[in-house]
Length: 355
Image (cartoon, rainbow, N blue to C red):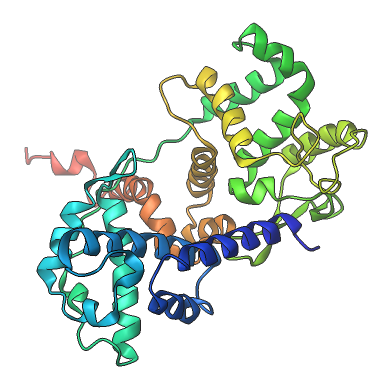
C-alpha cells in the first residue's frame, strides 16, 4: 500500500533542501549527507534552516570579510568561542528577517542550539573541527505547559455539534449539509485513535481494512504502522464511505480517503480550519487544534489504562519519555490518589484514648 501522499511530501522536502544548500557553504551539504541514515527528511530540512539563520548571523554580526552565509568556512567556525553562541542565543530571541520580526522562546532556542550541537559534534568527530564550544552551553530551560484538551462532556458536545450543525453560522450550516458525514468521520478518527494530522490527510481508501478494523498509516520518518480502530470510528467511516464512493475525484486523488469540496485530497490547512470551526462552539475558552484532539485521546487512554507504554505505542512516540513528559500531570495525580488509598491506622484508632 504505497502512500503516494507521503512520497510526494518527502520529495517536496528534498527539493527544498537542495534549494537551501545552494545558499549555504559546501560543508552543510556534507553534514546533510552525514545525517541521512538516521534522520527524517523533515528533520534535515529543519536543521539546515536553523543553520542558515546562524550563518547569516555570523556574517552580519561576528565575522569580518564574509559577504553571504555561503562564504563561511569550517575554519571560521573553529575560531568561535562560547561567548559567540551566547550572543547568538540572545540575538534569536528577537531579530529581523526581511520585513518580518522573528521571535524565539525557549523551545525555539533549544532547537537551534541542538542543530549547532549536531553540526559541531559531526565535524569534531571527523577531525575537521578541533573543539566543540557549543557543548559548553546550557540548554534553555523549557517550562512545562499544561495540556490543553477536551473534557469528556466537551468531546460529546463536539461530536453532537458536528452531527447537528448547531451553533454554526448560517453560512457554515449551508456547507455543513454537504460535509457532515466527512467532518464527523474526521473528528471521530482524531478523537478515537490519536492519529496525527499528517497521518490522517495521507490516508488512502486502500489503507482502511474494515475486516480487521485497522488503518495502515505512515508515521513521521516514513515508517508504516498499523493502527486499530473501534466501533465508533468504523460506523462514522462507513457512513462517510457511502458518499465518498459516489464522488468523482480529480486526477491524483482517486485513492484519497478524505476529500475537500474541490474533490481532491483534503489539505492540512483545511482540516485545521474544520476542527477549529466545531471546537470553538463546543469549547469556546480553549484553543483546540488537531494536535489537541490527539492529546485528548492520549489523556483518555492513559486515564483508562494507566499504561504509559501503551499510550506511547499507539501515539507513535519512539521514546516513552516523550509520552511521559506530556502526561506528567496526570501521572502525578494518580500518585496522589495512591498516597491516599492506603491507611496505616484507622482514624478511630489514632484518636483513641485510654479510659
